[in-house]
Length: 183
Image 1 (cartoon, helix red, strand yellow):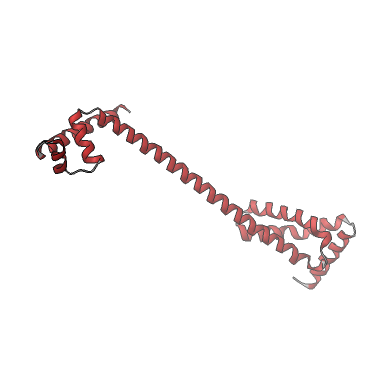
Image 2 (cartoon, one colour; image 1 turned 45 degrees about the vertical axis):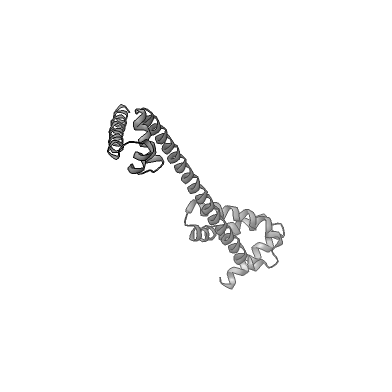
């Protein structure tokens, strides 16, 4: 900034500190657009930049009485704008992160609810099978036994175990297909 501009700002600040409220209006007219431009350069959002500039003016007005070097007003005020802009980005990023986490949690909740609903439907469907087919399905899919192990557990031939599993699958497909068409 040119020395002449610093002197003008220094005079305006000194006048305000002496009680001349009109000097503040002149400072606002001189600097408000620069504050908005600086904030926009950092946050890349015009509305947010205007809000930041407005917030900065409140801070500046509250602390202007204590400014020891009135000619340093420009650098001092721009530092406030810079800091507030960085703070706004941090707050926005935290809010975005929280929104994303909430959205993810909602998606996971829906998926979990949907998965639980599918499990319940599948369990009802399996329970609708004849007892000998239910047993084979549970041993094969829930407890991960092989057909050979199932045949030994149930004391049936491997062919019978395969046949029961096949017929159980076919019935499950039919039941599920029929439910799908009902919905």
